[in-house]
Length: 314
Image 1: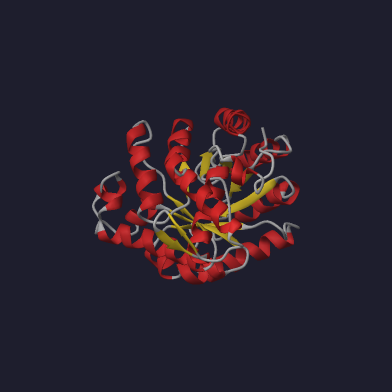
Image 2 (image 1 turned 120 degrees about the vertical axis):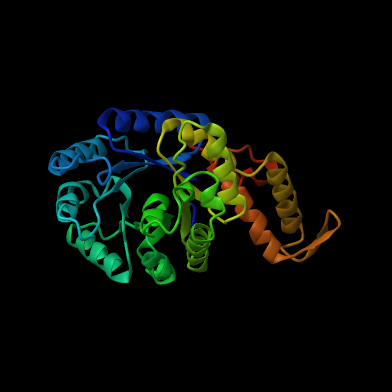
């Protein structure tokens, strides 16, 4: 399953509008949509202003361009505003939305409740993205990922650390601790493994040091190359490009993949000796995924494989 490698969250009106404008500009630049814009009702809505915020998000989604990739994060299924979000946003906007993010899912029952509400609102086609934010949710990650409506699991770092009642130090939320503390690292690996077991997309958590671009690059590279994540959150526009760059294959990886796929085609997908190594259909699948990711991140594709990916969206 292929999704844009970055999921950008925004909940303030001026930033939501700028995010959609930036998405259009970068789609033109890259020739592919490299990030989703998720309009945030959970953290974006002020306490007591949830209804007004839902109407704002509805207007934003309905007025978005036809080619835009827009999603919405609604309140948790046990929150008093959940039903309002579904009726005020999902019901009128489901044809414009790419997915709905449901936070604080603890188990399969929460997924089923969300699906029932979306279906009742006429959004039978909309996939769910699920935010895993507690030890209980991590424990149920595999069964959550197995649900056919779930498209992606995201890791909620700060709530996960907080849910341990001080047993994980605050450093576990920082750029160093989130990749070294055993409980945090285990949770990330469980989520990635659950997603890959069921063909879903693992989405890595935010980096709280949002103004430190090197921290973003470091985290995104580690998430992609060490933990198996193929997507990552952004909470500031400056984080988008570093995430896309880190999630994209290198020029060498793209050239290697294209060369091998070209050799496989000429061999009618039989095993080949290429670059001093034996390759068969297992490695062909791997290198095909490299080319898919290159296309999705706007990388240049060699002429030998461009025909398989059609025209870019520029």
